[in-house]
Length: 430
Image (cartoon, rainbow, N blue to C red; front, side, top):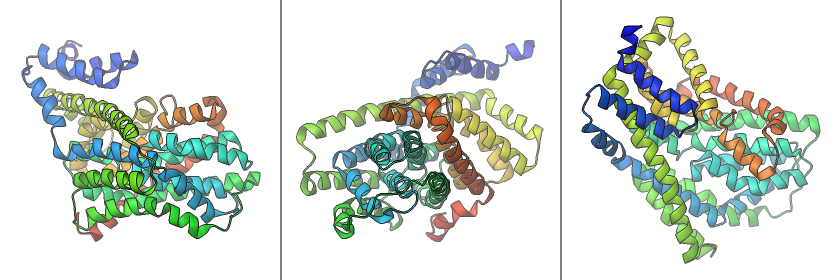
């Protein structure tokens, strides 16, 4: 007991969990516990400010505010509405057409926004009322929008990939390429689940209006967006950070000169929103990096790795335990915070089993996406119910089949690493 009380690793973990249980912001919990441990055990309190600065002063992280701003510009430009109209023309009146169309829109919009809650907010205000008007149950419509929007952090460009890359040092471009197939796997599993539910209730899409080519012409600028961004990265034209800047100017060009939907006042509001959103992310990155440095210094990382390996040295068993741990964490902790808490702990285990860090990052990101739809945190669900004016209890029965489909997709991605590694290897960036 005395050794435990005198162990800085114990206090680092304890002082993090206490404010977390008191529902204080997770960035505050990480930063305060790390700062106290560093000061009390004389680990060099002078390094606190330097460590915080060093974690945010990384060129690849510039992509985060750029992509946040780009997503906001694309939404303001009216691209989402045109994309939705095009997808509706594609799926027509087939069984579950609007549900499947919603999943396809969420997948495609994810290649623009990179944020789950933002995707719910953008497409939910259009598609939830639209599905209800077509005869779909409102709880099901809310669930489909909320769950499928989680694909936004799996399909590139993803802010979660950028955060993971900043922690592990892997290539952002390789992560972007690796996320495409897993993102499509999740989308397919959700489409199958939505189709079965729609078939059972005889829910269909809207009859085609015979305006396919007109809808395609209206949506062409939305379709070209990920093509330009990802094509430029994989074609070696620009880096992911430069691609984020290019996406801003592309969105401005479309919004100002093509759709005439962005004014000078609107641009100021977009800049203000992006600054607020990015500052929250950057504070989290700085505090998370400080906590990871303290955990490494006091030996917490080695202790956790040793604990997992003491349970079993079978890689499949350890992988299962890691996924269970991440799924539980996703229920309690929101978003990219999970990366800064757990990824430093998992790095020694990755090295021990010689797991590919690109595949491991994709798997962890899928876990975070599932965490966005599992209460009590469930950021996507809370945005969805705020739009539909339903309660969490009302939509939960409709969320469960989609949640199961997401876990099935996670199991496939975890069991077959080559699904994630095929594209980056084919492109020669792995």
